[in-house]
Image (cartoon, rainbow, N blue to C red; front, side, top):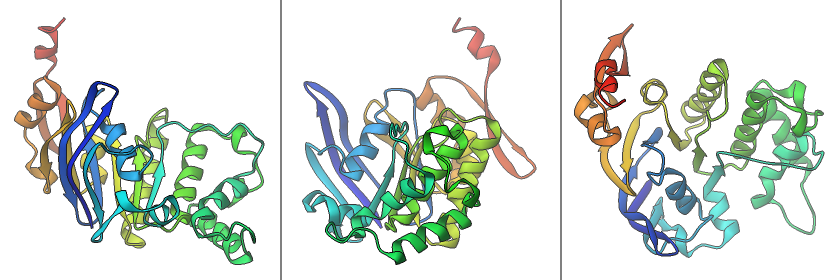
Length: 260
């Protein structure tokens, strides 16, 4: 489905991505890595927000780097880590904007587009928010609205940059549960970035470990992750355990004390 081949990207003279390559066939793929690894940058490159210096991004056999904005937006939806809407748009209006890649500029959204908004809001159980101003919502509500906006775009690949950032404990799990439901029930391929490996273990199928602008490992079976992977990735010792059949990872506190 998604094939990334030798992507390179610079900010000025600073090399941010260095020959990054990985594949994601289906399900939910997660990029894990420390701050400054290049996670947000590679997601922006894949979505077309910033151009790659070299390399290929291929979705279902099509090179997206050669597409115009509208065609690419029909293949890829992108939800940024931070979002700001300063105008008093309602939730309904914000989600409707997600249909822009499919809308005739002169005619505007159709009744069918508006019906899709109603269906998506109902699916995500946020119909009660449709007339509220987006800027008045809580962090968790805003994130669900952005998930709805990405979903209504009806793209083959959905990208979320740290969808749990700034969310409390409950809403982190709620948002990822919604994304997981969408991926499974609507057969959507999802690529996201996270900071918490335990959330990745719980909700994601494939893991991509990233550091210093490079993909260190592609892990198709998340249960095969070992402490050595995380030592290389984060530079700390970790301990793994199975709790109620679920893999979890914790930092080695004794090791952390030696770093202070």
